[in-house]
Image (cartoon, rainbow, N blue to C red; front, top):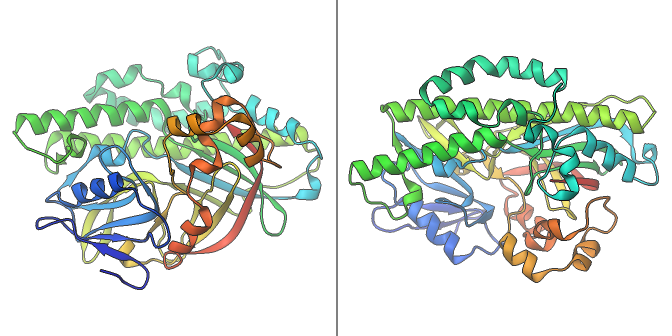
Length: 412
């Protein structure tokens, strides 16, 4: 069934409709089947909303908005709980930047521990516990998180041994990044992408496995074991919601710490005084929270999607060599007030490494000060969907406020 701005796909006799903002953007067959599996779950409320960056995920597709009544699916939230974006406009302009941006990139790499490759090993100290005197900012932020985390650990003791304090203010690897960007007026922005790091992964993994055990215990059959769920009213549900809310707080504060450290790093290279947070956005795109839609209070899981309520600012990044966007939500009710979280992958990391070369990466990131080696080929722009097509498909969901183009990109 076609509507003016989205298509509707039926999930079968017992499933809820799937409303897809994917006009002009390809959707892989495996992702479509995953959507139908999710829509067949008995506690889905109204319908599932699908964003134009949709692609295959674990259990549920990345780029989907899943409303539920009476249950939560931990694998739909995922293990990078609270992963999201932060962007801050500065009072600097392109003309204030040095001609050679390598010094800015290395200053950021020194300021923010990141990555897992040998080339960045020198900057990942706190990941391995080798920083004896972490920054005071980390201590202050951890003080706001510590008590609630200890309460969570009383119920789930093994979480106490995860990387939590040590990962606060660190970037990680994969598709996480820090960028310096220019907008349409040549204003300089700082933009970064990260989440709840090791502790969020441990929380997500624990409750995904707990949900699977509960399904086995109650002989509940599912189209995909990664759709295992925790029913509302159970202790495991309550414990998960408590832990996931904390992880989302950690992720938001993690981005704040990194942003402050990037700003200080820039001040060591750019001697001109400048202000930041002129316009600032800090938004999750892997998370769950209770919201009011179609007359009911429901749990909304955004797995690779951003809240786009009327007037709400969000961030939709492209790839290493593409544009990114600061957007304002239009509050489309059928999307549960949501939009995409990025361009979305068109191929796996393994496929990208097999298909593309270092020469391809160099050409695709021309004009961007960034790593151009074999370890980042999986993030090559051609492994992602066309961001312009993605934006066109969701014109009814958001309006563009600023268009950003990166000039510096730090990858883990």
